[in-house]
Amino acid sequence: MFAGRTFVAVVPARGGSKGIPRKNLAPLLGRPLIGHTLDAAAASAYLDAVVVSTDDDAIAEVSAGYGAHVVRRPAELASDTARTIDAVLHAVASLEVAPDNVVLLQPTSPLRTARDIDGAIEQFAAHGGESLASVSPVRQHPLFMRTMSPDGALARLLDEDSTRRRQDLPEVLIVNGAIYIAAVTGLTRETSLNDSRQGFVMSPLAGLDVDEPDDLLVVEALARSRQEETR
Image 1 (cartoon, rainbow, N blue to C red):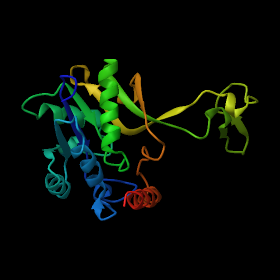
Image 2: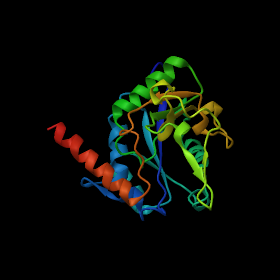
Image 3: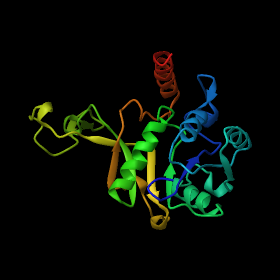
Image 4: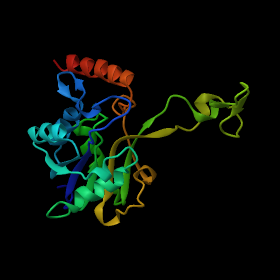
């Protein structure tokens, strides 16, 4: 609980995955990928509970071993086309007492820390908004990005003056998918947490998302480096 309001983490972790088979259980420094998120959530000072939504027996067993409350997700909410918001609403509805706020933590962001989670909750509570999404600065400004036609012709992605110096451009951020917070009373099937008005800034490295096999290699190298620094 923080500022008199309850916060419950929901970790969506279905068994299927296209880029990396059984991705949520993929080993990362001796722990399954989802274990890094569950450890961070358990270390949070403000989360009242951690709920894992899954359709998979192995994920359910691993998550329970980390102390999470497991909600079994029906098959129709675990397909490739199923939406995360539906899984979140299902998880919240399964609780005996609905929390004031839900904190969505995707297991594909293993470098997100308890400090990141608590910082986002503090900011959310301080600003009194309905929703928040974590963001990270991007190195490549979209002003310099181009699209390419089938014949190789380039065109500007943005129809703006691209002669401006990079250092004169405003900072650009991307929603990194690591942390979302929303008031439960405002959640509906039409809710898009990516369109949250409030942003919590994280470092690009802490916000890295594991989607393809190469991502797992990069994250493992960074996680190993972080481990060595804390020894």
